[in-house]
Length: 365
Image (tube, rainbow, N blue to C red; front, side, top):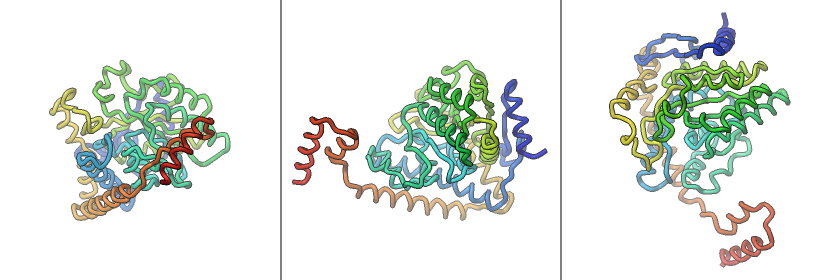
């Protein structure tokens, strides 16, 4: 039985029971629950480099936040595998719709790191994206990107495009109306979308159990008539395989797939948050032992294809990349009042045009 046939059988069964996928356990051992890994050694190393890059970017951004060089950062330490291992299964031509916590995968998809720094600073130039980037800017309105993804995924379906949309959401976002409207529309029209729900256990400070009585978040897909599965969010191999097969599934005309990744946010919701007020150190310690970095390092080391020296090279290169981006962002001119007004008003009213003219003259002088 091929992996794709296995996946089709799995999602069909999701109407009655939510499948759980895990390939690599916490000890770095292959367990192959649901699927097996198709990555060769070269691809495994590339995936590991991507994960180390993501963790290092997070660490450098947190440092920059503490130094006041960026705004109020929403860190994603612990969730990087749910973001980057899923993205690893997508094509550059696929369309990414990220949330405010998914700026790092947006960079990996092709947005310059400088834009990421500017985005965290709230600078308008952050959203001046490369014309060949298949993505929207990071969305801060919870769940609204699910509706956008459904629409674009339908356009891909209608035009017979070999492209899919991938969009992220947190567990708290599944309580929003846009979440259901998005998956419902996508299901009705067989939109080519892979929905990723990053279940990090908390909607800011609200535990997942107090957000919904649903046993899983994946089962919410059943209400829209689409398959939902759960994946170990600390298992990069399972995340990659599930996303790759979900992509193939939707491109085969079967409609969208919803993947719930069981992960954890090691740090605060944002740098202004204190997670010690709503969760215990024991809970954090338990999840730190499940870190994907530990299991991937063990697994790749056991195959003789990864070591600390290789990891350090990636860390040093990433630190240099982030530092250079911060320096470049420092040199970006600040937005003027007249530019702000032009950006807000495509067709200015007579009064706004007078203000634009007034501030333009002042800025020139």
